[in-house]
Amino acid sequence: VMPHGHAAGQRMKLTRTQLGWSRSAIRSSIVAVTVGRGNAKSTWAGAFALWTLLDPPPGDIAPEISAVAASREQARSGVFQTALDMLALAPEWLQDHVHYYSDSANPRIACSNGGNLRIRAAQAGKLQGQINSLSILDEIGVVPDPKVWQALVTGLGKRPGSTVIGIGTPWQPDGVLFDLKMQADSGKLPPDIAFHDHSLPASADIEDRKLWRRANPVRAELDPSGWLHTL
Image (cartoon, rainbow, N blue to C red; front, top):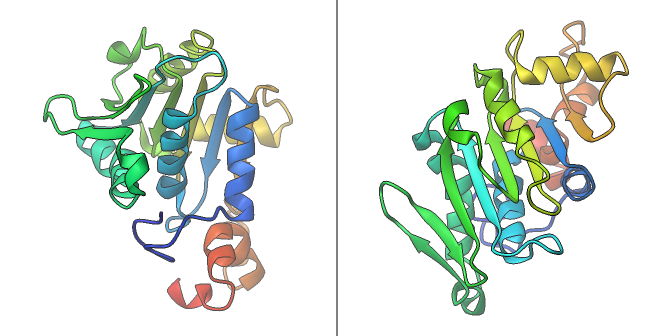
């Protein structure tokens, strides 16, 4: 159920763009998404995290999912909180299987299958050795230490079907998103990485409304007739 924003309180229906992100997250081990603010990145990521928690990849027992951000506070207020808000609106039968434990030191959403959704700060040293089914790095474009992404990626393969997802809006020169974009633009992106780049080149005509739609695909798909008025 959508916890806020467009269609709040209604059953979530993925847009065509979000379906594309989801297919990549199922088929690829590494996924990066960069798109403008207000395009439901955290909403999609929170829903995907809950889905993985409830229905992990075949062979994965007691899935472990980490919502990672620059700080624990940001991790808690982003993807984790979105998933928690969705859970609060979920049907009663689902709430019987998924519970929230509000320990301030280690809050988590736990499932009856033994799985957990936890928050993590983007500290490479503490992420080393984590064996996650799914890791979601929020605002990947502003995480200053590339070793954070490397720590998550090197943890792949320890669980069947494990995946790392990075979502964000801008990118810093020399940052992970910038490097991925350079690889994608040059045709050198490794085949196991799915990169969804909804940004526009610096030379784009900012008055061109067709380009506005390209940079805001989810907003345009959710509200085809009124999305322009929200910019």
